Image (cartoon, rainbow, N blue to C red; front, side, top):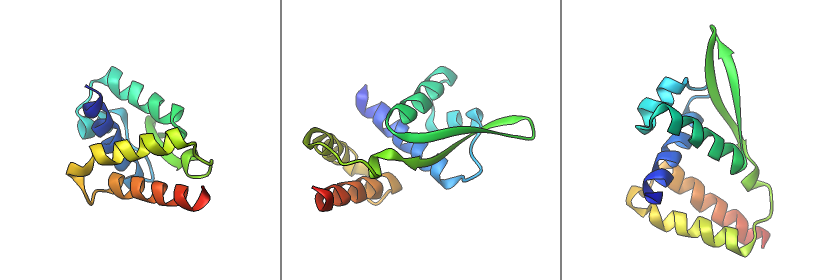
Length: 114
């Protein structure tokens, strides 16, 4: 279900953003409840969505780090703003969470740019 994936990816962004030194794939799996294959697909989705996701090696272990979002710097189309607003409404059940605050900030920035 798409809502489940949206929530899982939102948790992934929140977890990665709270860990500046990155998370192992095991930590990603535990934080999101995803299978290993789904966790890798979600990381790819983040990259495809404009997030810079890099892999650092710490003590021989791969750690995934999210460093920035291209969405915040590129002007948005009306369809992109509508999609973000829809995601924001879909996540209203987690009001006050980091991801909802981020969506609100993106929407606010898009209003000032538009």
